[in-house]
Image (cartoon, rainbow, N blue to C red):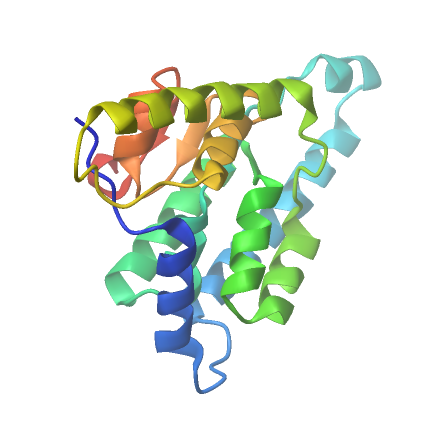
Length: 202
């Protein structure tokens, strides 16, 4: 049986309002992460310059997709959650190219502090071209979820939205089948192919 949590958008909005109603600046953990990723990009460029062109073409770069709730923890979480998010992102960045679905970007912008979100993603990028396979997978898995929900009867819990499934489908097709998230249940149920990295698994 599926146990739904509060909607993603509601969680993002409430967390942002609680922590940024006074116009708070970016957190210490976010500054640390931005510095770490900037240094990582610099070292990768230096390494690529030293490699022969043929070796550079042959090198495969693994990807990992980041869910909205990880960034919410980083931008606006308490000390423990923010530290976990930064460490998880730094660890993932040492092994893979970090990527996000456009749905994640949109949720964060909708939640608040769009300038800070824009600054972060202008440095680290968003996978804007998701393609037909991602949309099809999201629709198929969301359809399975909707069917399961109807079978649960009178009180199936809070309804999940299509954005959840776009994030999962993005990870499946464009994110190296790896997803950093704090929302493990929905992805474990409907995207069993994914490797899920969550706080309890670090």
